[in-house]
Image (cartoon, rainbow, N blue to C red):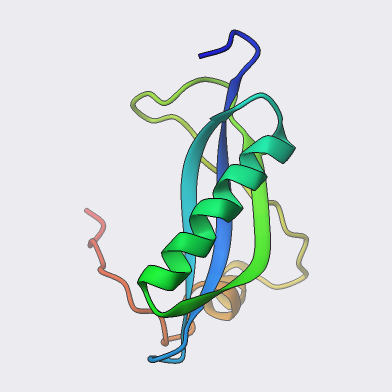
Length: 107
């Protein structure tokens, strides 16, 4: 790997046509720039969309990681301004009741 390369995570959004389901995926890339990381991710996104009978929606958000992958490394961060209080914010953006995900109970 080139010494000028860094680690980037890229979040891409898909629509799985058979199920009318949307999927967000975050993938990890070693690249020389954010643009190169997005290009790599979008190439992979096209293949992935084909494999899952879906459609890549053209949204790629890149995050430059401060360090390489290691235990507890931050892979992605997105800041969003909102006037909503915490419970309403979570219900609006993350807990609509239509998510298809496993759950881990807090201890």
